[in-house]
Each structure stands twice: as C-alpha cells, then as structure tokens.
Image (tube, rainbow, N blue to C red; front, top):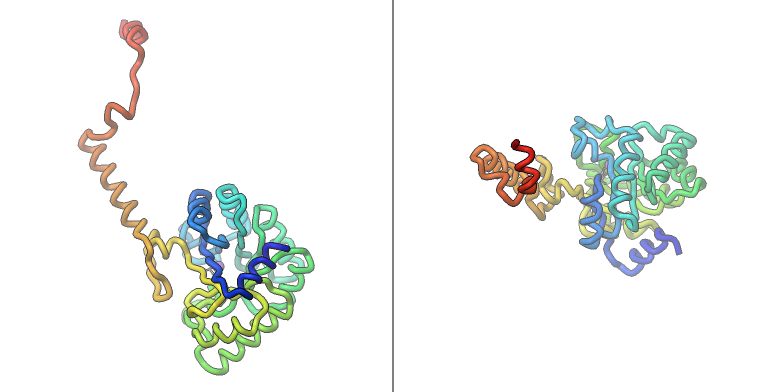
Length: 267
Ligand code: KIV
Ligand code: NA
C-alpha cells in the first residue's frame, strides 16, 4: 500500500490528518518527534523565512533547497512540497518542476488552482498530488475569504470534484466557509486539508511560524500554541546584557593553556 493509500484509509476511518509546515531540518525533526503526520514545505517559506514580500518571489531553487533540508531533518516523514508561482504553466513544465522537488525529497507536490489537466500530467509522471483551492496566495491578492456566495461555493465544489476526478491525492481548502468545506470533504475520495475552513475537513494544516508565534503575523484562522518569537527575543536580550556587563562568557565556557605551555608561551 502506498503512503497516499494509508492517508486515504485514515479518511475512511475518520482519523484526522495533522499537517504542519516546516522549512528547515531541526523544525522538521521536532515535528516528527511531536507526532505530525505530514510535513508541508510551503511557498510560505518566502514570507516566513526568506524575507520576501510575497510568495510570488519564491523560486524552484528555493523550494528544492528547503525541501532537502526538511528531508535531512526528517528522513522518514511524508513531505508535501509547493510548486512555486509560474512553474506549472504547462503540463510539461509542471512535470519538470515536480521532478526537481521530488529529487530534493518531496513525496508529493502541491499546486494552486482548478487545473485537472495538471493533476493528470503529474499523476501520469508518477507523483502524488495535492491540490489547493479557495485562497490561492500565488494568484489572488486582496480579499482573503473565498466561496462566500452560493454561486462561488458551487464553483469551488465543482472545481474540487473535477480535481478529484483527475486523481488528486489531497486538497488544501484555504479560507472557505465551513459548510462548503464539509460538503467538499464528504464528496471527495481525496483527503481534504483545511486552513481556516472549519473542523469537518479530513485534516488541518497551519504555518508553524503562526502556530508558534515566531513571525509577526496573526490570523483569525490560527491558534498560538507557543510564543517562540518572544522567547527568542528574551534569550537574545539576556545574552546582549551579559556580554556588555562581562557576565558572559564565564570560566566554564573557555579553556586554558596547560601550565607548562603557558610558561613557555609567556617567556
Ligand atoms: O505555503 C503554505 O504554507 C501553504 C499552506 C498554508 C497550505 O500553502
Ligand atoms: Na503555499
């Protein structure tokens, strides 16, 4: 049974999929140790780690670099990697880009938008595929909530069904009404992974920088389970104080020349 089949069994049994982003080896290791089911190396690496103004600046090389780091930190994890903006314009380009992420260590590739022909191309090339509809950060600016009219909701449901028909393994539902996400989850063979899409999805994903308050952003869909940013600032401030006041380093942080070497050195 493939790993994607195992995740589908979890859907059938009603076991929730715990998905979380990671962009580096130690974070990935911590997530595996804490029991995360799937690590997502999202193009959110751009704004959370690389200092870019938007996801659109993220390149395939950036994604490969961070997927490889996560793979080194979590050798056995199931990793979903994002195809960045404008790297899957055609079926051929999508296949080439996906091959690059798979070579870096991705088990599954994710892309944004209702494009069943891209799902088919990637499945034919042997990739596990995660789709992503609702808020598409690569393609939409401004309004974050999606599917808020009956017509828009019906369109997203139809998109999800078409992607399922094409063979997707997972689909991220971002910032859509909970009733719509529940309906899509019931209708699909693929596992739905929600973010700001209610509790009825097969799984949930958050950005680890949001969950642990490592970044500066705060979102209605997020819950802060830690205060890593505050802890880091506190640790750095204490270090700076100690250096300036001569309290760091202490004796135990260094070492001396052996007495005979010292005597010879000082001659
Ligand atoms: O890039 C990302 O982190 C994502 C998740 C929020 C789904 O696409
Ligand atoms: Na993303």
